[in-house]
Image 1 (tube, rainbow, N blue to C red):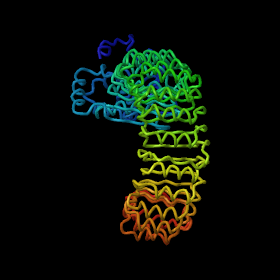
Image 2: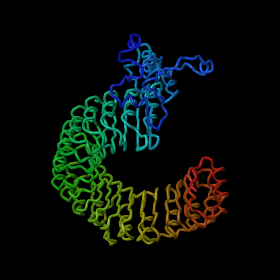
Image 3: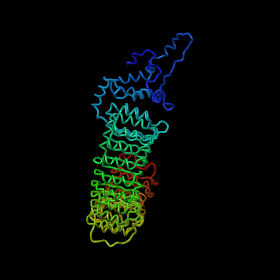
Image 4: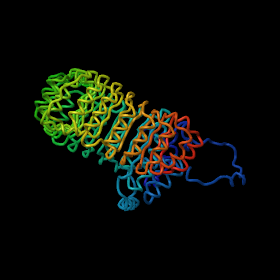
Length: 636
């Protein structure tokens, strides 16, 4: 306002001259191109040499408007507005006003209005609002509206932006608007934004000092410079996730480690400039705070694993994926580093360096490990698994996926270990299983509650019978895509489960028939809560009659692609004690409109009904179901 009062017509504050030194910034207000309609004041007025002639009609049409004022004057007016509500109201007038208001920092608001704004903020919960922009909705205009609008409603706490809007996506201007208007920001997630660079994130770092969570994915324009600014200005940072950012490297991790002493979680994926030096500095600097660490597709070697094994004294969750330069020595040193005493969950995937020797060392060096997931570890065999099981006596959950050297011999040997506490075992796509008969020892594994086997072609009746005899306390059984399983293998398992089956999924086991379902309903009808028979083509109405008669607690039933008819649906409807919440009959071609009254009766308790690809059910019946079952989500 002082410039306006002292204006003499020749100074910097003149009509048509921008208040911004950077012509790109000023251009945002004067013109947004053909994508937005924004008022633009001409730089010079044309001179007219003709004599002035008063025209009453023209005079009447001319209206005095605030829009004739340049951006500099409007800026001075806006920063004097009384409170956030008034600024929000002005922002709704036009894009030009919105963009101008979004450039006002908190320290640029006049003292009188700032006092009122502070009073308003005290009446709101600061920083509890969340906003998410995706695809076409991710634009600078929307970010400017969020920056101005959320200030009067408690302040923005979390912001997620997932582009990429190529036509008019998010740029540095949008991030700057957020930084100026949302100083309460604690969480920021930026994905696939090609027009964002260091400039925008540095502004966030300079203004949003309460930032706790930062997630960057596929942003090549951001480099170490921006991350260093975050490290220097955001000491409360607790979670950092960086994925596919080609210009972020060791310098960033060193700055983060040295300045962010509250850091608890770090995830680094596919960043080619991140190496051993960055990991070493990060781990040594945050050894007392870092609890979760995920490294994937990085150019790190055995040195990084050695550092993790020594300095990871607070780490409870560790994931190592696709580390091609790590060898057997790295895992051996990590296990013998004696620093991972608090580690509870470990995932190793696509690491050829994990061998039997490495697994045994990890078992000895991580005495409190409870969850262990091994995916695509080609050199792991039964010997390593057995040695690991003897060392890691706290293990409760084990997942093996595409570990083709592991057989049922190694698995069963691990289960008969007297000290085992294993509760859950999952096997996926393991080709090493051969359906052989084993002599079951007298000892039993009374801790295993969950058995999941997916697409292991060699897993047949013999393997299933062995698990049934060895693990009598099984309650959750999931066997999917196992064509070698028949009634003769599944029935003994049913009779061996002393605790009572609670959840059973045998989807894709095409050779299982009504005999198994009827026997299961009879023996475990008092405990069974979820039953998935998807794709069991030999299951018919007889199974539905058995389920309706015996299963008292069943709340989820999936008979998709089965051989049931309208009679089977009617049997379920007649059951007095059955109280289903979810029913799926997708692909049951023999279910027709005759089932409509029965579905309506069952629907009294349903929250989900799947009748997709039931060609016998007409559109009118579907419409009636939708109208009558208002509390049920129907897929048709």
